[in-house]
Image 1 (cartoon, rainbow over the protein chains, first blue to last red):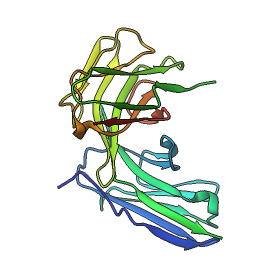
Image 2: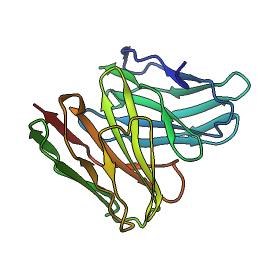
Image 3: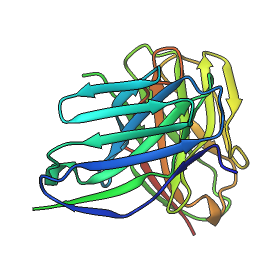
Amino acid sequence: QKEVEQDPGPLSVPEGAIVSLNCTYSNSAFQYFMWYRQYSRKGPELLMYTYSSGNKEDGRFTAQVDKSSKYISLFIRDSQPSDSATYLCAMDSGYALNFGKGTSLLVTP
Amino acid sequence: EAQVTQNPRYLITVTGKKLTVTCSQNMNHEYMSWYRQDPGLGLRQIYYSMNVEVTDKGDVPEGYKVSRKEKRNFPLILESPSPNQTSLYFCASSLSSPDEQFFGPGTRLTVL
């Protein structure tokens, strides 16, 4: 079983919708949780970083971590066409990042 | 400007011809890493380095070599490339631990 599971999508939503992206993991040693965004033909860029269980908000983005369920989520409110990208969850094992395979999101005008 | 640079950005080569992809960062980061990204497989770590002269294998190290002689540079070496190494390669760096990595723009490698 891969340590980090992420539905690859693609996910298509209309502009203004609330988007929910999710990952599950199996290694309870993971302490740090990140979401990266990758536009086509670009390198991933860090979007959100969380340490503990709970919610962290940054503008239209909310990252949620539930360590008891080994489940993390990224919510995007009022989605925009510029949010169209691949979103990768990542978890820190102490010496490396373990990435999900990424979810492709398309926000249509 | 803080950045991670990779060269070349695009490379087409033939089986067995040794090549090096360079990676350089100007942020005085200790941690550097190489990934390959393939459709359906996501980002997989090849090698990482916690500091100068300290390197270790990631998930898919076979067929690759790295070195870390200076803090800013972390080249990826393919001694005898094969077609299954055709991929999109990313170099990344972070301050001292693997989280909050900054990624380079990527190198698209095709091995014929």
